[in-house]
Image (spheres, rainbow, N blue to C red):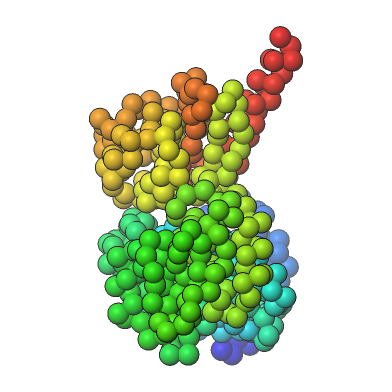
Length: 461
Protein backbone atom coordinates (compact mmCIF):
# COMPACT_ATOMS: atom_id res chain seq x y z
CA UNK A 1 0.00 0.00 0.00
CA UNK A 2 1.83 3.11 -1.27
CA UNK A 3 1.13 6.09 0.99
CA UNK A 4 3.55 8.80 -0.07
CA UNK A 5 1.69 11.70 -1.65
CA UNK A 6 -1.72 10.02 -1.28
CA UNK A 7 -4.65 12.06 -0.02
CA UNK A 8 -6.10 10.16 2.92
CA UNK A 9 -8.97 11.08 5.21
CA UNK A 10 -9.21 9.69 8.75
CA UNK A 11 -12.77 9.77 10.10
CA UNK A 12 -13.13 9.82 13.88
CA UNK A 13 -10.46 10.85 16.36
CA UNK A 14 -10.54 8.13 18.97
CA UNK A 15 -7.28 6.44 19.95
CA UNK A 16 -7.07 4.48 16.71
CA UNK A 17 -7.99 7.48 14.54
CA UNK A 18 -5.33 9.67 16.11
CA UNK A 19 -2.69 6.94 15.80
CA UNK A 20 -3.68 6.29 12.18
CA UNK A 21 -3.38 9.94 11.24
CA UNK A 22 0.11 10.25 12.77
CA UNK A 23 1.24 7.01 11.11
CA UNK A 24 -0.07 8.01 7.67
CA UNK A 25 1.60 11.40 7.92
CA UNK A 26 4.91 9.75 8.85
CA UNK A 27 4.65 7.77 5.62
CA UNK A 28 4.33 10.92 3.53
CA UNK A 29 0.56 10.96 2.99
CA UNK A 30 -1.46 14.17 2.83
CA UNK A 31 -3.72 13.58 5.81
CA UNK A 32 -6.98 15.19 6.84
CA UNK A 33 -9.00 14.18 9.88
CA UNK A 34 -12.72 14.75 10.28
CA UNK A 35 -14.65 14.52 13.54
CA UNK A 36 -18.13 15.60 14.59
CA UNK A 37 -16.80 16.90 17.90
CA UNK A 38 -15.97 20.56 18.35
CA UNK A 39 -12.49 22.08 18.40
CA UNK A 40 -12.85 22.51 22.16
CA UNK A 41 -13.69 18.83 22.62
CA UNK A 42 -10.61 17.87 20.57
CA UNK A 43 -8.23 20.12 22.51
CA UNK A 44 -6.05 17.22 23.67
CA UNK A 45 -5.67 15.69 20.21
CA UNK A 46 -5.13 18.84 18.13
CA UNK A 47 -1.55 19.79 19.10
CA UNK A 48 -0.05 16.46 17.99
CA UNK A 49 -2.03 16.52 14.73
CA UNK A 50 -1.15 20.10 13.84
CA UNK A 51 2.51 19.56 14.73
CA UNK A 52 2.57 16.61 12.33
CA UNK A 53 1.05 18.68 9.53
CA UNK A 54 -2.37 17.02 9.59
CA UNK A 55 -5.36 19.08 8.46
CA UNK A 56 -8.30 19.02 10.87
CA UNK A 57 -12.01 19.31 10.19
CA UNK A 58 -13.97 19.57 13.45
CA UNK A 59 -17.61 20.07 14.37
CA UNK A 60 -19.03 17.92 11.55
CA UNK A 61 -18.26 16.19 8.26
CA UNK A 62 -18.09 18.08 4.98
CA UNK A 63 -19.20 16.24 1.84
CA UNK A 64 -16.44 17.82 -0.23
CA UNK A 65 -13.85 16.63 2.29
CA UNK A 66 -14.91 13.04 1.68
CA UNK A 67 -14.89 13.41 -2.11
CA UNK A 68 -11.31 14.59 -2.48
CA UNK A 69 -9.53 11.55 -1.07
CA UNK A 70 -7.63 8.56 -2.45
CA UNK A 71 -8.40 6.53 0.67
CA UNK A 72 -10.59 6.86 3.76
CA UNK A 73 -9.63 5.27 7.08
CA UNK A 74 -12.60 5.04 9.42
CA UNK A 75 -12.36 4.64 13.20
CA UNK A 76 -14.28 1.72 14.80
CA UNK A 77 -16.69 4.04 16.58
CA UNK A 78 -17.93 5.61 13.33
CA UNK A 79 -20.90 3.73 11.78
CA UNK A 80 -20.37 2.71 8.17
CA UNK A 81 -23.83 4.01 7.26
CA UNK A 82 -22.76 7.59 8.04
CA UNK A 83 -24.11 9.48 4.98
CA UNK A 84 -20.75 10.90 3.98
CA UNK A 85 -19.15 7.44 4.01
CA UNK A 86 -22.03 5.97 2.02
CA UNK A 87 -21.60 8.67 -0.62
CA UNK A 88 -17.80 8.22 -0.70
CA UNK A 89 -18.15 4.50 -1.33
CA UNK A 90 -20.66 5.32 -4.03
CA UNK A 91 -17.97 7.35 -5.77
CA UNK A 92 -15.59 4.38 -5.54
CA UNK A 93 -13.35 5.70 -2.76
CA UNK A 94 -11.84 2.77 -0.79
CA UNK A 95 -12.90 2.78 2.87
CA UNK A 96 -10.90 0.71 5.35
CA UNK A 97 -10.39 0.67 9.11
CA UNK A 98 -7.34 1.04 11.30
CA UNK A 99 -7.03 -2.73 11.71
CA UNK A 100 -6.85 -3.24 7.95
CA UNK A 101 -4.38 -0.36 7.57
CA UNK A 102 -2.12 -1.77 10.29
CA UNK A 103 -2.38 -5.30 8.94
CA UNK A 104 -0.78 -4.21 5.66
CA UNK A 105 2.40 -3.09 7.46
CA UNK A 106 2.54 -5.37 10.51
CA UNK A 107 5.45 -7.85 10.59
CA UNK A 108 5.31 -11.30 12.18
CA UNK A 109 2.46 -13.65 12.99
CA UNK A 110 -0.98 -12.49 14.12
CA UNK A 111 -3.19 -14.11 16.75
CA UNK A 112 -6.57 -12.37 16.53
CA UNK A 113 -9.24 -12.92 19.17
CA UNK A 114 -12.89 -11.90 18.94
CA UNK A 115 -16.19 -12.83 20.58
CA UNK A 116 -19.14 -11.17 22.24
CA UNK A 117 -17.60 -11.72 25.67
CA UNK A 118 -14.21 -12.68 27.09
CA UNK A 119 -12.01 -11.01 24.45
CA UNK A 120 -9.93 -8.90 26.79
CA UNK A 121 -9.31 -11.59 29.39
CA UNK A 122 -8.32 -14.12 26.73
CA UNK A 123 -6.14 -11.64 24.85
CA UNK A 124 -4.35 -10.58 28.04
CA UNK A 125 -3.80 -14.20 29.06
CA UNK A 126 -2.48 -15.13 25.60
CA UNK A 127 -0.14 -12.17 25.73
CA UNK A 128 1.29 -13.32 29.06
CA UNK A 129 1.73 -16.90 27.82
CA UNK A 130 3.41 -15.88 24.57
CA UNK A 131 5.76 -13.46 26.36
CA UNK A 132 6.68 -16.11 28.93
CA UNK A 133 7.61 -18.48 26.09
CA UNK A 134 10.39 -16.09 25.10
CA UNK A 135 8.89 -15.09 21.75
CA UNK A 136 8.80 -11.36 20.89
CA UNK A 137 5.16 -10.47 21.62
CA UNK A 138 2.99 -7.38 21.32
CA UNK A 139 -0.56 -7.13 22.71
CA UNK A 140 -3.06 -4.58 21.45
CA UNK A 141 -6.04 -3.79 19.28
CA UNK A 142 -9.36 -3.29 21.01
CA UNK A 143 -7.65 -4.05 24.32
CA UNK A 144 -6.11 -0.58 24.44
CA UNK A 145 -3.07 -0.02 22.19
CA UNK A 146 -4.07 0.65 18.55
CA UNK A 147 -2.61 -1.93 16.19
CA UNK A 148 -1.19 0.82 13.97
CA UNK A 149 0.93 1.96 16.95
CA UNK A 150 2.56 -1.49 17.04
CA UNK A 151 3.76 -1.53 13.45
CA UNK A 152 7.13 0.08 14.16
CA UNK A 153 8.05 -2.43 16.89
CA UNK A 154 6.71 -5.53 15.13
CA UNK A 155 9.21 -8.22 14.16
CA UNK A 156 9.24 -10.96 11.57
CA UNK A 157 10.01 -13.51 14.28
CA UNK A 158 7.38 -12.19 16.69
CA UNK A 159 3.69 -12.48 17.52
CA UNK A 160 1.05 -9.76 17.49
CA UNK A 161 -1.72 -10.78 19.90
CA UNK A 162 -4.78 -8.69 19.03
CA UNK A 163 -8.24 -8.25 20.47
CA UNK A 164 -10.52 -7.37 17.56
CA UNK A 165 -14.13 -6.20 17.69
CA UNK A 166 -16.98 -6.53 15.23
CA UNK A 167 -16.60 -2.80 14.51
CA UNK A 168 -12.97 -3.35 13.49
CA UNK A 169 -13.72 -6.48 11.47
CA UNK A 170 -16.43 -4.71 9.44
CA UNK A 171 -13.79 -2.83 7.48
CA UNK A 172 -11.12 -5.46 6.82
CA UNK A 173 -10.16 -6.45 3.28
CA UNK A 174 -6.92 -8.47 3.46
CA UNK A 175 -6.39 -8.78 7.23
CA UNK A 176 -5.03 -12.30 7.74
CA UNK A 177 -4.39 -13.82 11.19
CA UNK A 178 -2.33 -16.99 11.45
CA UNK A 179 -4.50 -18.01 14.39
CA UNK A 180 -8.06 -16.69 14.72
CA UNK A 181 -10.20 -17.27 17.82
CA UNK A 182 -13.95 -16.77 18.12
CA UNK A 183 -14.84 -17.21 21.78
CA UNK A 184 -18.61 -16.97 21.40
CA UNK A 185 -21.27 -15.03 19.51
CA UNK A 186 -24.33 -13.82 21.42
CA UNK A 187 -26.57 -10.77 20.83
CA UNK A 188 -24.62 -7.52 21.16
CA UNK A 189 -24.29 -4.17 19.37
CA UNK A 190 -27.58 -4.74 17.56
CA UNK A 191 -28.14 -0.98 17.73
CA UNK A 192 -25.08 -0.65 15.45
CA UNK A 193 -25.30 -3.75 13.22
CA UNK A 194 -29.08 -3.73 12.80
CA UNK A 195 -29.59 -7.48 13.03
CA UNK A 196 -28.05 -10.60 14.50
CA UNK A 197 -27.24 -11.81 10.99
CA UNK A 198 -25.15 -8.71 10.26
CA UNK A 199 -23.42 -9.00 13.62
CA UNK A 200 -22.51 -12.66 13.00
CA UNK A 201 -21.24 -11.81 9.52
CA UNK A 202 -18.95 -9.13 10.98
CA UNK A 203 -17.51 -11.55 13.53
CA UNK A 204 -16.91 -14.24 10.93
CA UNK A 205 -14.81 -11.88 8.83
CA UNK A 206 -11.96 -12.74 11.20
CA UNK A 207 -11.35 -15.95 9.22
CA UNK A 208 -12.39 -14.72 5.76
CA UNK A 209 -8.78 -14.53 4.50
CA UNK A 210 -7.45 -17.63 6.22
CA UNK A 211 -6.25 -20.65 4.23
CA UNK A 212 -5.64 -24.32 4.95
CA UNK A 213 -2.28 -23.33 6.48
CA UNK A 214 -3.98 -21.27 9.20
CA UNK A 215 -5.83 -22.16 12.42
CA UNK A 216 -9.33 -21.25 13.61
CA UNK A 217 -10.21 -21.84 17.28
CA UNK A 218 -13.94 -22.16 18.01
CA UNK A 219 -16.19 -22.73 21.01
CA UNK A 220 -17.85 -26.15 20.77
CA UNK A 221 -20.58 -25.05 23.20
CA UNK A 222 -21.78 -21.99 21.27
CA UNK A 223 -24.33 -22.54 18.48
CA UNK A 224 -23.15 -19.63 16.36
CA UNK A 225 -19.48 -20.62 16.44
CA UNK A 226 -20.44 -24.20 15.59
CA UNK A 227 -22.16 -22.92 12.46
CA UNK A 228 -19.18 -20.73 11.59
CA UNK A 229 -17.06 -23.85 11.11
CA UNK A 230 -19.03 -24.71 7.98
CA UNK A 231 -17.88 -21.51 6.28
CA UNK A 232 -14.21 -21.68 7.26
CA UNK A 233 -11.30 -22.79 5.05
CA UNK A 234 -8.71 -23.04 7.83
CA UNK A 235 -7.83 -25.89 10.20
CA UNK A 236 -10.43 -25.92 12.96
CA UNK A 237 -9.62 -26.60 16.60
CA UNK A 238 -12.27 -26.65 19.30
CA UNK A 239 -12.39 -25.84 22.98
CA UNK A 240 -15.07 -27.13 25.33
CA UNK A 241 -15.73 -27.09 29.06
CA UNK A 242 -18.32 -29.88 28.79
CA UNK A 243 -17.26 -32.57 26.31
CA UNK A 244 -14.22 -34.02 24.51
CA UNK A 245 -13.11 -32.32 21.30
CA UNK A 246 -11.83 -34.10 18.19
CA UNK A 247 -8.85 -31.77 18.25
CA UNK A 248 -8.25 -28.91 20.63
CA UNK A 249 -8.67 -28.32 24.39
CA UNK A 250 -11.25 -29.71 26.78
CA UNK A 251 -11.79 -30.88 30.36
CA UNK A 252 -10.96 -34.48 31.24
CA UNK A 253 -10.89 -35.77 34.83
CA UNK A 254 -10.91 -32.23 36.27
CA UNK A 255 -7.96 -31.09 34.16
CA UNK A 256 -7.43 -29.18 30.93
CA UNK A 257 -6.06 -31.48 28.25
CA UNK A 258 -4.86 -30.94 24.68
CA UNK A 259 -5.38 -33.23 21.72
CA UNK A 260 -3.48 -32.35 18.54
CA UNK A 261 -5.73 -34.48 16.31
CA UNK A 262 -8.29 -37.27 16.49
CA UNK A 263 -5.63 -39.99 16.70
CA UNK A 264 -3.28 -38.22 19.10
CA UNK A 265 -2.96 -39.05 22.77
CA UNK A 266 -4.29 -36.62 25.37
CA UNK A 267 -1.68 -34.24 26.76
CA UNK A 268 -2.42 -32.94 30.28
CA UNK A 269 -1.94 -29.18 30.64
CA UNK A 270 -3.09 -28.20 34.16
CA UNK A 271 -5.71 -29.07 36.79
CA UNK A 272 -8.82 -26.90 36.73
CA UNK A 273 -8.23 -26.24 40.45
CA UNK A 274 -5.15 -24.16 39.56
CA UNK A 275 -7.24 -21.56 37.67
CA UNK A 276 -7.90 -18.55 39.89
CA UNK A 277 -10.46 -16.84 37.63
CA UNK A 278 -14.10 -17.14 38.70
CA UNK A 279 -16.91 -18.53 36.54
CA UNK A 280 -17.40 -21.10 33.79
CA UNK A 281 -17.01 -18.38 31.16
CA UNK A 282 -13.47 -17.76 32.37
CA UNK A 283 -12.79 -21.48 32.20
CA UNK A 284 -13.75 -21.24 28.52
CA UNK A 285 -11.44 -18.24 28.11
CA UNK A 286 -8.56 -20.24 29.57
CA UNK A 287 -9.33 -23.21 27.30
CA UNK A 288 -9.26 -20.92 24.24
CA UNK A 289 -5.96 -19.36 25.33
CA UNK A 290 -4.39 -22.78 25.93
CA UNK A 291 -5.55 -23.94 22.50
CA UNK A 292 -4.02 -20.89 20.80
CA UNK A 293 -0.78 -21.29 22.72
CA UNK A 294 -0.44 -24.95 21.80
CA UNK A 295 -1.03 -24.10 18.13
CA UNK A 296 1.83 -21.60 18.42
CA UNK A 297 4.10 -24.36 19.71
CA UNK A 298 4.34 -23.19 23.33
CA UNK A 299 5.22 -25.80 25.95
CA UNK A 300 2.81 -27.06 28.61
CA UNK A 301 5.20 -26.01 31.39
CA UNK A 302 5.06 -22.37 30.29
CA UNK A 303 1.28 -22.44 29.80
CA UNK A 304 0.60 -24.01 33.19
CA UNK A 305 2.78 -21.56 35.11
CA UNK A 306 1.23 -18.47 33.48
CA UNK A 307 -2.38 -19.65 33.81
CA UNK A 308 -1.88 -20.49 37.48
CA UNK A 309 -0.49 -17.01 38.18
CA UNK A 310 -2.95 -15.06 36.02
CA UNK A 311 -5.43 -12.81 37.82
CA UNK A 312 -8.63 -11.14 36.64
CA UNK A 313 -8.23 -8.23 34.24
CA UNK A 314 -9.47 -4.88 35.53
CA UNK A 315 -13.26 -4.44 35.18
CA UNK A 316 -13.82 -8.18 34.54
CA UNK A 317 -15.26 -9.76 37.70
CA UNK A 318 -12.64 -7.79 39.59
CA UNK A 319 -12.75 -8.11 43.36
CA UNK A 320 -12.79 -4.65 44.92
CA UNK A 321 -13.36 -4.91 48.67
CA UNK A 322 -15.05 -6.76 51.53
CA UNK A 323 -17.06 -4.50 53.84
CA UNK A 324 -18.94 -5.96 56.82
CA UNK A 325 -18.73 -9.38 55.19
CA UNK A 326 -20.19 -8.14 51.86
CA UNK A 327 -17.99 -8.59 48.79
CA UNK A 328 -17.98 -5.99 46.00
CA UNK A 329 -17.14 -6.99 42.42
CA UNK A 330 -16.56 -4.75 39.42
CA UNK A 331 -17.65 -6.27 36.10
CA UNK A 332 -18.18 -3.00 34.24
CA UNK A 333 -17.08 -4.76 31.03
CA UNK A 334 -20.34 -6.74 31.17
CA UNK A 335 -21.88 -4.47 28.54
CA UNK A 336 -24.42 -6.96 27.17
CA UNK A 337 -27.00 -9.35 28.59
CA UNK A 338 -24.97 -12.50 27.97
CA UNK A 339 -21.96 -11.08 29.85
CA UNK A 340 -24.21 -10.17 32.78
CA UNK A 341 -25.66 -13.69 32.81
CA UNK A 342 -22.13 -15.12 32.96
CA UNK A 343 -21.25 -12.75 35.82
CA UNK A 344 -24.34 -13.75 37.83
CA UNK A 345 -23.62 -17.43 37.20
CA UNK A 346 -20.16 -17.01 38.74
CA UNK A 347 -21.76 -16.65 42.21
CA UNK A 348 -24.05 -19.15 43.98
CA UNK A 349 -26.49 -16.50 45.21
CA UNK A 350 -27.00 -13.56 47.54
CA UNK A 351 -26.33 -11.09 44.70
CA UNK A 352 -27.24 -7.41 44.75
CA UNK A 353 -26.98 -6.55 41.06
CA UNK A 354 -26.44 -3.10 39.56
CA UNK A 355 -27.94 -2.90 36.06
CA UNK A 356 -28.28 -0.11 33.52
CA UNK A 357 -26.63 2.40 31.25
CA UNK A 358 -27.16 3.01 27.55
CA UNK A 359 -29.35 0.36 25.94
CA UNK A 360 -27.99 -1.60 22.95
CA UNK A 361 -31.37 -2.88 21.77
CA UNK A 362 -31.04 -5.73 24.28
CA UNK A 363 -33.57 -8.22 25.61
CA UNK A 364 -33.36 -8.15 29.42
CA UNK A 365 -36.10 -10.77 29.85
CA UNK A 366 -33.33 -13.33 29.26
CA UNK A 367 -32.12 -12.55 32.78
CA UNK A 368 -35.29 -13.85 34.47
CA UNK A 369 -34.15 -17.39 35.43
CA UNK A 370 -30.86 -16.25 36.97
CA UNK A 371 -32.47 -13.29 38.72
CA UNK A 372 -35.03 -15.56 40.37
CA UNK A 373 -32.40 -18.11 41.34
CA UNK A 374 -29.49 -15.99 42.57
CA UNK A 375 -30.28 -12.27 42.87
CA UNK A 376 -31.75 -10.70 46.01
CA UNK A 377 -32.32 -7.28 44.41
CA UNK A 378 -31.59 -5.27 41.27
CA UNK A 379 -30.55 -1.62 41.43
CA UNK A 380 -31.16 0.21 38.14
CA UNK A 381 -29.20 3.18 36.82
CA UNK A 382 -28.91 5.22 33.64
CA UNK A 383 -30.95 5.74 30.50
CA UNK A 384 -32.02 2.09 30.13
CA UNK A 385 -33.47 1.86 33.66
CA UNK A 386 -37.14 2.11 32.67
CA UNK A 387 -36.81 -0.57 29.96
CA UNK A 388 -34.93 -2.88 32.30
CA UNK A 389 -37.45 -2.41 35.10
CA UNK A 390 -40.30 -3.25 32.74
CA UNK A 391 -38.62 -6.34 31.28
CA UNK A 392 -37.45 -7.87 34.58
CA UNK A 393 -40.61 -7.12 36.56
CA UNK A 394 -41.51 -10.04 38.79
CA UNK A 395 -38.11 -11.71 38.54
CA UNK A 396 -36.46 -9.81 41.41
CA UNK A 397 -36.94 -6.90 43.77
CA UNK A 398 -36.10 -3.73 41.83
CA UNK A 399 -34.79 -0.49 43.33
CA UNK A 400 -34.67 2.51 40.98
CA UNK A 401 -31.49 4.46 41.73
CA UNK A 402 -30.65 6.58 38.64
CA UNK A 403 -26.98 7.00 39.59
CA UNK A 404 -24.20 4.56 40.39
CA UNK A 405 -23.48 6.26 43.70
CA UNK A 406 -27.10 5.86 44.80
CA UNK A 407 -27.11 2.21 43.68
CA UNK A 408 -24.06 1.42 45.82
CA UNK A 409 -25.62 3.17 48.80
CA UNK A 410 -28.85 1.20 48.45
CA UNK A 411 -27.09 -2.11 47.85
CA UNK A 412 -24.85 -1.60 50.87
CA UNK A 413 -27.91 -0.85 52.99
CA UNK A 414 -29.73 -4.04 52.02
CA UNK A 415 -26.82 -6.49 51.68
CA UNK A 416 -25.94 -8.83 54.55
CA UNK A 417 -22.71 -10.62 55.44
CA UNK A 418 -22.03 -13.28 52.83
CA UNK A 419 -23.82 -11.35 50.06
CA UNK A 420 -22.23 -9.93 46.90
CA UNK A 421 -22.69 -6.47 45.39
CA UNK A 422 -22.06 -6.88 41.67
CA UNK A 423 -21.73 -4.20 39.00
CA UNK A 424 -22.59 -6.08 35.79
CA UNK A 425 -24.71 -3.51 33.95
CA UNK A 426 -25.66 -5.30 30.67
CA UNK A 427 -25.44 -1.90 28.94
CA UNK A 428 -22.84 0.42 27.49
CA UNK A 429 -21.68 3.30 29.65
CA UNK A 430 -22.00 6.26 27.32
CA UNK A 431 -25.05 7.83 28.95
CA UNK A 432 -23.24 8.73 32.19
CA UNK A 433 -19.58 7.82 31.69
CA UNK A 434 -16.80 8.17 29.11
CA UNK A 435 -16.50 4.39 28.69
CA UNK A 436 -16.79 1.16 30.67
CA UNK A 437 -13.34 1.75 32.21
CA UNK A 438 -14.48 5.10 33.59
CA UNK A 439 -17.64 3.49 34.99
CA UNK A 440 -15.58 0.73 36.62
CA UNK A 441 -13.13 3.19 38.15
CA UNK A 442 -15.95 5.27 39.61
CA UNK A 443 -17.51 2.12 41.07
CA UNK A 444 -14.22 1.15 42.71
CA UNK A 445 -13.63 4.66 44.03
CA UNK A 446 -17.09 4.78 45.58
CA UNK A 447 -16.73 1.34 47.15
CA UNK A 448 -13.25 2.04 48.50
CA UNK A 449 -14.41 5.41 49.85
CA UNK A 450 -17.18 3.54 51.69
CA UNK A 451 -14.62 1.05 52.99
CA UNK A 452 -12.47 3.92 54.23
CA UNK A 453 -15.43 5.57 55.92
CA UNK A 454 -16.39 2.32 57.65
CA UNK A 455 -12.81 1.83 58.85
CA UNK A 456 -12.68 5.40 60.17
CA UNK A 457 -15.99 4.98 61.99
CA UNK A 458 -14.74 1.75 63.58
CA UNK A 459 -11.57 3.46 64.81
CA UNK A 460 -13.57 6.45 66.09
CA UNK A 461 -15.92 4.17 67.98
